[in-house]
Image (cartoon, rainbow, N blue to C red; front, side, top):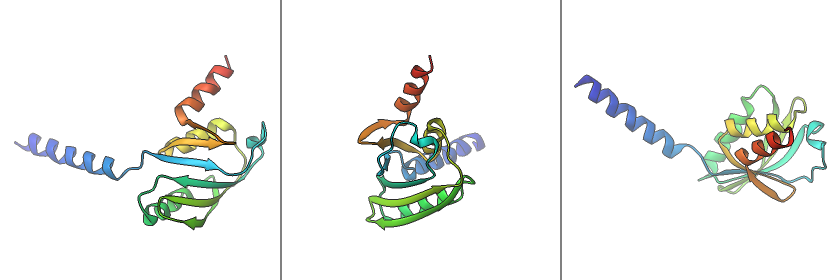
Length: 131
């Protein structure tokens, strides 16, 4: 009986947490990035979309601030579903780092220079290039 009760509680917690977690976030980098510019850029004028409300966007920004590589994260505008942020990193990183960073934040899509791809597609593109 204890095992059944434990399993039931675990399933309820799992389902509740997956309902709250974001899975449809899109990170749009608003600045035009030339080839290779990602390796020298530390400030990203960004838009994150896919939030359910303003509080969720604020919580997401707070989560960004806890990352040791993030120097600052400022919310410029917050309409609820969309949030413009100025994200400043402590040092520049490569494309793979930012894709992994987005995946850790449960960002599903990244849009750069008008091209929108999933994080998985972007990682696959990098792997195919290096072959």
